[in-house]
Amino acid sequence: MRGALRVVPFALLVVGATGALLVGCSISDAAGPRSPAPPSSTGPSGPQATAARAPGEAGEEEDGPSNGPTGSGTDPAVAEALDCLQGSWTMTSFAVETEDSVMSHGRGGDVEFVFGPDRWRMSDDGDRPVAVSIGRRDAQLSIDGSAEGDLETDEDGVHYEVDEAEGEVEMLLADHTTTHPVPLQHVVGTVVPSGATTVDCGADEATISSRNASVNQVLTLVR
Image 1 (cartoon, rainbow, N blue to C red):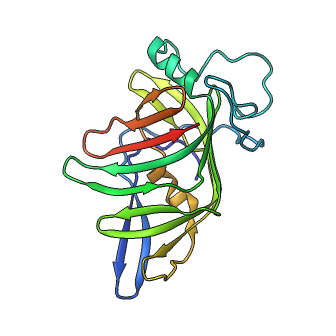
Image 2 (image 1 turned 180 degrees about the vertical axis):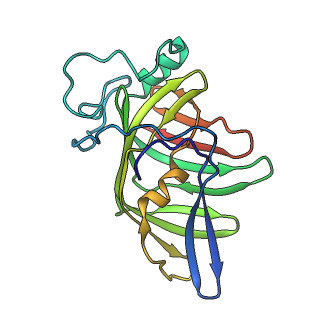
């Protein structure tokens, strides 16, 4: 998956008599795609202290110091939250919600996020599946791959653009049947909030929430 995603994507588990299928859906807004930045060649780093920077996660080696994410006139509170977010985190949960219900929810696993001054990266080796609930259906989601992109700010909030997503996702259903693997690019928009987001960051826990009026995405992380 290349280019910017100014969308509100979500995943639906459709279970029929022949099995299950994980389908990635999206609702686009009026914004067009931006030119992607070259993906980072450096893998995720180990745990770091609060507000520490993630070496190499801003793309190629830096020629000089970076003052923060792309975007001029960043609100001081937003800049402080993004500075706190820099470093390595582990996902504790994600959710896709409407006003009336939770459409999908995932918890656990070993999905790592690394944030730099203007880049982000998500990765997992699939060893510890994420427990997911979609509607009234429960399953285990195995993510084996990585996704990364630019971290940008504007007057609407913080955006996590996707430059590249590689790998596969496989789901084990409650009856122990396994779905066919699907590309990670079909699922990354369910885990990573799209469009404008807000960031609430503390020393050991952070929450990234979308600001969409109809479908809300929430990603929670711990150090």
